[in-house]
Image (cartoon, rainbow, N blue to C red; front, side):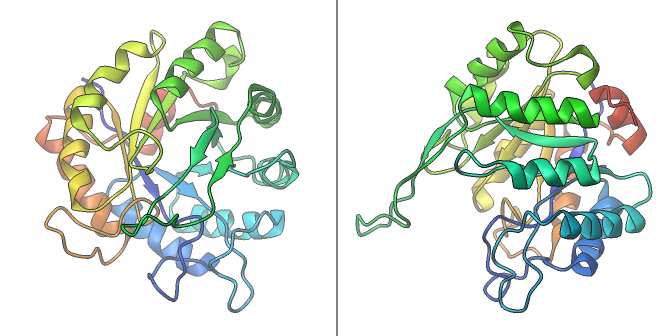
Length: 290
Protein backbone atom coordinates (compact mmCIF):
# COMPACT_ATOMS: atom_id res chain seq x y z
CA UNK A 1 0.00 0.00 0.00
CA UNK A 2 1.20 3.51 -0.78
CA UNK A 3 2.81 5.54 1.91
CA UNK A 4 0.43 8.03 3.52
CA UNK A 5 0.70 11.71 2.63
CA UNK A 6 -0.31 13.89 5.58
CA UNK A 7 -1.77 17.35 4.96
CA UNK A 8 -2.28 19.94 7.67
CA UNK A 9 -5.08 22.53 7.27
CA UNK A 10 -3.56 25.20 9.49
CA UNK A 11 -6.42 27.64 10.03
CA UNK A 12 -10.03 28.01 8.97
CA UNK A 13 -11.95 30.35 6.71
CA UNK A 14 -13.82 32.41 9.30
CA UNK A 15 -12.81 30.98 12.70
CA UNK A 16 -12.47 33.91 15.10
CA UNK A 17 -9.03 33.75 16.78
CA UNK A 18 -10.55 35.48 19.83
CA UNK A 19 -12.88 32.51 20.30
CA UNK A 20 -10.63 29.67 19.12
CA UNK A 21 -6.81 29.90 19.06
CA UNK A 22 -6.13 29.59 15.33
CA UNK A 23 -3.02 31.06 13.68
CA UNK A 24 -3.43 34.32 11.74
CA UNK A 25 -0.10 36.17 11.48
CA UNK A 26 2.82 34.90 9.37
CA UNK A 27 4.76 34.08 12.54
CA UNK A 28 1.83 32.14 14.00
CA UNK A 29 1.24 30.29 10.73
CA UNK A 30 4.93 29.38 10.50
CA UNK A 31 5.08 28.13 14.10
CA UNK A 32 1.98 25.96 13.69
CA UNK A 33 3.27 24.66 10.35
CA UNK A 34 6.58 23.76 11.94
CA UNK A 35 4.85 21.70 14.65
CA UNK A 36 2.77 19.89 12.01
CA UNK A 37 5.81 19.37 9.76
CA UNK A 38 7.76 17.83 12.65
CA UNK A 39 4.80 15.50 13.31
CA UNK A 40 4.84 14.22 9.71
CA UNK A 41 2.80 16.63 7.55
CA UNK A 42 4.47 17.23 4.19
CA UNK A 43 1.70 19.52 2.82
CA UNK A 44 0.33 22.71 4.41
CA UNK A 45 -3.13 23.82 3.29
CA UNK A 46 -3.07 27.61 3.65
CA UNK A 47 -5.93 30.03 4.21
CA UNK A 48 -5.08 33.72 4.41
CA UNK A 49 -6.50 36.17 6.94
CA UNK A 50 -6.62 39.93 7.13
CA UNK A 51 -3.66 41.08 9.22
CA UNK A 52 -5.15 44.31 10.61
CA UNK A 53 -6.03 44.38 14.34
CA UNK A 54 -9.48 42.98 15.00
CA UNK A 55 -9.93 41.59 11.48
CA UNK A 56 -8.09 38.27 11.87
CA UNK A 57 -11.36 36.34 11.51
CA UNK A 58 -11.84 37.65 7.94
CA UNK A 59 -10.29 36.07 4.83
CA UNK A 60 -7.75 37.98 2.77
CA UNK A 61 -6.95 37.74 -0.94
CA UNK A 62 -4.07 40.21 -0.76
CA UNK A 63 -1.14 38.74 -2.74
CA UNK A 64 1.30 40.51 -0.38
CA UNK A 65 -0.27 38.68 2.59
CA UNK A 66 -0.09 35.43 0.63
CA UNK A 67 3.59 35.96 -0.15
CA UNK A 68 4.51 36.86 3.44
CA UNK A 69 2.63 33.92 4.97
CA UNK A 70 3.90 31.38 2.44
CA UNK A 71 7.50 32.63 2.72
CA UNK A 72 7.32 32.28 6.52
CA UNK A 73 5.99 28.72 6.27
CA UNK A 74 8.59 27.71 3.68
CA UNK A 75 11.38 29.13 5.85
CA UNK A 76 10.12 27.29 8.94
CA UNK A 77 9.62 23.98 7.08
CA UNK A 78 12.40 23.34 4.53
CA UNK A 79 11.02 21.33 1.59
CA UNK A 80 7.35 21.72 2.59
CA UNK A 81 4.62 21.61 -0.09
CA UNK A 82 2.22 24.57 -0.11
CA UNK A 83 -1.46 23.94 -0.92
CA UNK A 84 -3.29 27.26 -1.32
CA UNK A 85 -7.02 27.73 -0.78
CA UNK A 86 -9.08 29.25 -3.62
CA UNK A 87 -12.68 29.02 -2.41
CA UNK A 88 -14.70 32.16 -3.14
CA UNK A 89 -18.41 32.79 -3.66
CA UNK A 90 -19.43 34.61 -6.84
CA UNK A 91 -18.02 35.21 -10.29
CA UNK A 92 -15.11 37.46 -9.24
CA UNK A 93 -12.20 35.09 -8.66
CA UNK A 94 -9.46 37.67 -9.26
CA UNK A 95 -8.34 37.48 -5.60
CA UNK A 96 -7.46 33.79 -5.48
CA UNK A 97 -6.07 33.91 -9.04
CA UNK A 98 -3.76 36.81 -8.10
CA UNK A 99 -2.56 34.86 -5.05
CA UNK A 100 -1.84 31.74 -7.14
CA UNK A 101 0.12 33.83 -9.62
CA UNK A 102 2.12 35.51 -6.85
CA UNK A 103 3.17 32.52 -4.74
CA UNK A 104 2.96 29.77 -7.39
CA UNK A 105 1.97 27.04 -4.90
CA UNK A 106 2.72 23.48 -5.90
CA UNK A 107 -0.91 22.58 -5.09
CA UNK A 108 -4.12 24.62 -4.97
CA UNK A 109 -7.62 23.61 -3.99
CA UNK A 110 -10.05 23.40 -6.91
CA UNK A 111 -13.63 23.37 -5.64
CA UNK A 112 -15.22 21.02 -8.11
CA UNK A 113 -18.96 21.62 -7.83
CA UNK A 114 -21.68 23.80 -6.35
CA UNK A 115 -23.30 23.18 -2.97
CA UNK A 116 -26.21 24.65 -1.03
CA UNK A 117 -24.11 25.71 1.96
CA UNK A 118 -26.44 25.28 4.93
CA UNK A 119 -26.39 24.73 8.66
CA UNK A 120 -29.43 24.49 10.94
CA UNK A 121 -29.56 25.10 14.68
CA UNK A 122 -31.38 22.88 17.19
CA UNK A 123 -34.18 25.47 17.40
CA UNK A 124 -34.84 25.22 13.64
CA UNK A 125 -33.24 28.55 12.73
CA UNK A 126 -30.49 28.77 10.12
CA UNK A 127 -26.98 29.24 11.56
CA UNK A 128 -26.37 31.69 8.69
CA UNK A 129 -28.53 32.80 5.75
CA UNK A 130 -28.74 29.91 3.24
CA UNK A 131 -26.21 30.43 0.48
CA UNK A 132 -24.87 28.72 -2.62
CA UNK A 133 -21.16 27.95 -2.85
CA UNK A 134 -21.16 28.31 -6.63
CA UNK A 135 -18.61 26.37 -8.63
CA UNK A 136 -19.95 25.94 -12.17
CA UNK A 137 -17.76 24.24 -14.76
CA UNK A 138 -16.79 27.59 -16.32
CA UNK A 139 -15.39 28.75 -12.96
CA UNK A 140 -13.55 25.46 -12.41
CA UNK A 141 -12.01 25.87 -15.88
CA UNK A 142 -10.83 29.42 -15.07
CA UNK A 143 -9.03 28.12 -11.99
CA UNK A 144 -7.50 25.20 -13.91
CA UNK A 145 -6.24 27.54 -16.63
CA UNK A 146 -4.33 29.70 -14.13
CA UNK A 147 -3.08 26.66 -12.20
CA UNK A 148 -1.72 25.27 -15.46
CA UNK A 149 -0.07 28.60 -16.26
CA UNK A 150 1.62 28.60 -12.82
CA UNK A 151 2.67 24.94 -12.69
CA UNK A 152 0.18 24.27 -9.88
CA UNK A 153 -1.45 20.87 -9.27
CA UNK A 154 -5.21 20.99 -8.61
CA UNK A 155 -6.69 19.15 -5.65
CA UNK A 156 -10.36 18.64 -6.56
CA UNK A 157 -12.55 19.37 -3.50
CA UNK A 158 -15.64 17.13 -3.49
CA UNK A 159 -18.38 18.01 -1.01
CA UNK A 160 -20.91 15.53 -2.31
CA UNK A 161 -21.12 12.23 -4.22
CA UNK A 162 -22.24 13.97 -7.42
CA UNK A 163 -19.16 16.18 -7.29
CA UNK A 164 -16.92 13.09 -7.11
CA UNK A 165 -18.60 11.84 -10.28
CA UNK A 166 -18.29 15.28 -11.90
CA UNK A 167 -14.52 15.26 -11.38
CA UNK A 168 -14.33 11.94 -13.19
CA UNK A 169 -16.14 13.64 -16.09
CA UNK A 170 -13.74 16.62 -15.98
CA UNK A 171 -10.87 14.16 -16.40
CA UNK A 172 -12.58 12.42 -19.30
CA UNK A 173 -13.16 15.83 -20.92
CA UNK A 174 -9.43 16.60 -20.73
CA UNK A 175 -9.74 19.49 -18.25
CA UNK A 176 -6.72 18.21 -16.29
CA UNK A 177 -3.69 18.67 -18.54
CA UNK A 178 -1.15 15.80 -18.59
CA UNK A 179 1.57 17.98 -16.99
CA UNK A 180 -0.59 18.96 -13.96
CA UNK A 181 0.16 15.80 -11.99
CA UNK A 182 -1.93 12.83 -11.00
CA UNK A 183 -5.70 13.27 -10.68
CA UNK A 184 -6.50 13.93 -7.01
CA UNK A 185 -9.88 13.85 -5.29
CA UNK A 186 -10.39 15.36 -1.83
CA UNK A 187 -13.50 13.92 -0.15
CA UNK A 188 -14.83 16.64 2.13
CA UNK A 189 -17.10 15.06 4.74
CA UNK A 190 -18.91 16.74 7.58
CA UNK A 191 -20.22 19.95 6.02
CA UNK A 192 -23.83 19.92 7.23
CA UNK A 193 -25.35 20.06 3.71
CA UNK A 194 -22.68 17.90 2.08
CA UNK A 195 -21.51 14.31 2.56
CA UNK A 196 -21.73 13.12 6.16
CA UNK A 197 -18.59 11.95 7.91
CA UNK A 198 -19.40 8.25 7.57
CA UNK A 199 -16.99 5.33 7.20
CA UNK A 200 -19.53 3.21 5.28
CA UNK A 201 -20.05 5.96 2.70
CA UNK A 202 -16.31 6.57 2.44
CA UNK A 203 -15.73 2.94 1.47
CA UNK A 204 -18.10 3.25 -1.51
CA UNK A 205 -16.59 6.35 -3.08
CA UNK A 206 -13.28 5.15 -4.62
CA UNK A 207 -15.19 3.10 -7.23
CA UNK A 208 -16.50 6.37 -8.72
CA UNK A 209 -13.01 7.80 -9.24
CA UNK A 210 -10.90 7.67 -12.38
CA UNK A 211 -8.28 4.91 -12.70
CA UNK A 212 -4.82 5.76 -11.33
CA UNK A 213 -6.15 8.70 -9.33
CA UNK A 214 -5.21 9.48 -5.73
CA UNK A 215 -7.60 10.57 -2.99
CA UNK A 216 -7.70 11.98 0.48
CA UNK A 217 -10.41 12.68 3.04
CA UNK A 218 -11.05 15.99 4.79
CA UNK A 219 -13.19 15.25 7.84
CA UNK A 220 -14.97 18.06 9.66
CA UNK A 221 -16.35 17.55 13.15
CA UNK A 222 -15.34 16.55 16.66
CA UNK A 223 -14.04 13.28 18.10
CA UNK A 224 -16.38 11.30 15.79
CA UNK A 225 -14.12 12.01 12.81
CA UNK A 226 -11.25 9.85 14.06
CA UNK A 227 -12.68 6.39 13.27
CA UNK A 228 -13.27 7.67 9.73
CA UNK A 229 -9.65 8.87 9.51
CA UNK A 230 -8.67 5.33 10.51
CA UNK A 231 -10.89 3.89 7.76
CA UNK A 232 -9.30 6.32 5.25
CA UNK A 233 -5.86 5.01 6.21
CA UNK A 234 -7.01 1.39 5.86
CA UNK A 235 -8.58 2.03 2.43
CA UNK A 236 -5.39 3.60 1.06
CA UNK A 237 -6.50 7.23 1.11
CA UNK A 238 -4.32 10.17 2.01
CA UNK A 239 -4.95 11.92 5.31
CA UNK A 240 -5.71 15.51 6.30
CA UNK A 241 -6.54 17.31 9.51
CA UNK A 242 -5.79 20.58 11.28
CA UNK A 243 -7.47 23.43 13.11
CA UNK A 244 -9.51 24.25 9.99
CA UNK A 245 -11.28 20.89 10.28
CA UNK A 246 -11.45 20.11 14.01
CA UNK A 247 -10.38 21.30 17.44
CA UNK A 248 -10.70 17.84 19.01
CA UNK A 249 -8.43 14.85 19.56
CA UNK A 250 -9.73 11.25 19.49
CA UNK A 251 -10.35 11.26 23.26
CA UNK A 252 -12.60 14.31 22.94
CA UNK A 253 -10.16 16.77 24.51
CA UNK A 254 -9.27 20.05 22.82
CA UNK A 255 -6.13 19.95 20.68
CA UNK A 256 -3.30 22.22 21.78
CA UNK A 257 -2.54 22.97 18.13
CA UNK A 258 -1.91 21.51 14.69
CA UNK A 259 1.06 19.43 15.80
CA UNK A 260 -1.06 17.39 18.21
CA UNK A 261 -3.68 16.74 15.50
CA UNK A 262 -1.08 15.59 12.95
CA UNK A 263 0.51 13.31 15.56
CA UNK A 264 -2.85 11.52 15.89
CA UNK A 265 -3.25 11.38 12.10
CA UNK A 266 0.18 9.78 11.72
CA UNK A 267 -0.88 7.18 14.30
CA UNK A 268 -3.89 6.28 12.11
CA UNK A 269 -1.55 5.62 9.17
CA UNK A 270 0.84 3.57 11.29
CA UNK A 271 -1.98 1.41 12.69
CA UNK A 272 -2.96 0.68 9.08
CA UNK A 273 0.61 -0.47 8.38
CA UNK A 274 1.53 2.55 6.28
CA UNK A 275 4.66 4.65 6.52
CA UNK A 276 4.47 8.46 6.39
CA UNK A 277 5.52 10.03 3.09
CA UNK A 278 8.27 12.63 3.14
CA UNK A 279 7.79 15.82 1.11
CA UNK A 280 9.97 14.36 -1.65
CA UNK A 281 7.94 11.14 -1.69
CA UNK A 282 4.67 13.11 -1.70
CA UNK A 283 5.87 15.09 -4.72
CA UNK A 284 6.63 11.87 -6.55
CA UNK A 285 3.28 10.28 -5.64
CA UNK A 286 1.31 13.34 -6.80
CA UNK A 287 3.41 13.94 -9.92
CA UNK A 288 4.51 17.44 -8.86
CA UNK A 289 7.24 19.19 -10.82
CA UNK A 290 9.11 21.19 -8.21
